[in-house]
Image 1: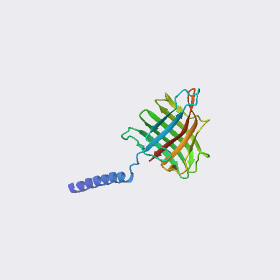
Image 2: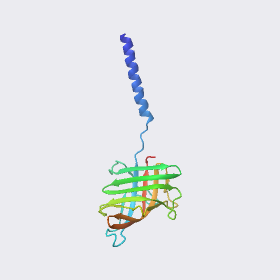
Image 3: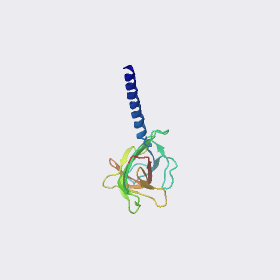
Image 4: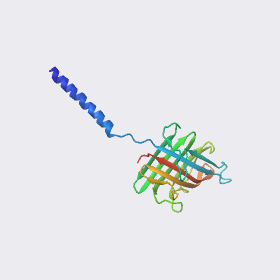
Length: 189
């Protein structure tokens, strides 16, 4: 009787351990999101009393991505993103660090987006110089596109894109963004 209980206990423990190991092996840890952006904020005159300036998290241009920050990494960046689709993609990305924040949203973009035929979306942007968050109004969306001959592009889980925003507003202030860049990688799909 004692032997039967011992065998039963061993069988229960072995089954439980196998279940734990099987669960641990079947769910790989997703890669950590990473991102960078470089935004050129433009003062448009009397309607935009904020000085024009360039701000960036990491280092990205149309042709280089020399520093892409990892969510929760040494720079204490916060990066979240989702790039889903197959031939046409939906993109959301947000990257912030050191009091700088930018968020992009592109409901639909494909690999053929150009400056002459861009995808439309929105940007929200804040730095210490802007005195709060500026956002593109829905009536005047931002243009998102890929610069030819560069590494820019979009695929499931990643995007590297250029954009301009003819209008970004904060209360009564109306400014703009000239050609700017963002990259998000290891994104959810």
